[in-house]
Length: 284
Image (cartoon, rainbow, N blue to C red; front, side):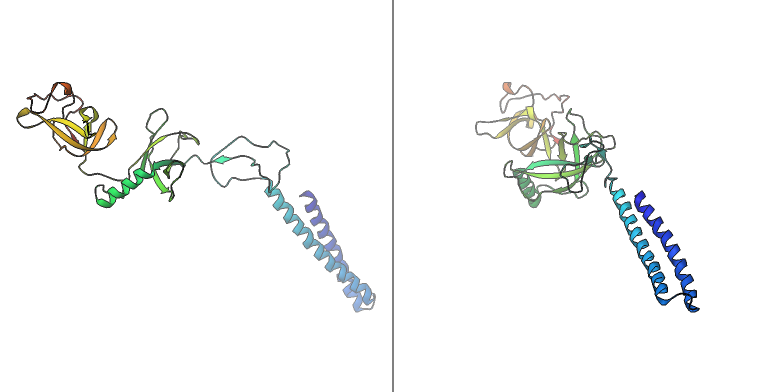
């Protein structure tokens, strides 16, 4: 860069000298004190000096651009990794080795996987009206960290892949989360809960009060009329925490028997005693 600046200064000095000489020769030519050839040479020298100045200025601009290229600016905000090269090492524009890697941490993307079977069942349930879709909440995503704690910030679902991974039979979903405390780091494993559909008036029943009969059907014992045991066959869709999501066989307010099941039989009189685990089926 210094050499290019010196070349510009030299060209500026040369143009000043040649311009002055060309001006003098113009006046001398009028009085025939110099020949036409001498004037032409002085005028050509002035024009050559102008061209040399333009060339030097272009070279200075190129040198400035090359100097700016020596400073690599990250297009994103984030945290930089350790450098892959040392100071003084030769690098080039087309090299395959990165100087360093900058990772954006806030916001951060979290990739999730959902089985194609679950996704198909969800779409069928939404299409049939068994599940409702709430546009205000359907993209909300919650996370649980590796230690089981709940991540304090909620994310939003950005998109889902349109193809199924043939190796795992799953679809990839991507969510974006604010990460001001830098709790989420690349490569970390987390568990996510995505609200994709809402089932109105669903029944959640404790798992310990529901068993399977010889046919594999979900069954439960409830306190029926006149305080007698009544057997029910249920449609248990899935587990949510310590409960079953029951779509049929139980109604809100039914008293589900969760203890002493081995001592009772249908039609036997019982006296229901509520437990601290809320034995009644819970509407959600």
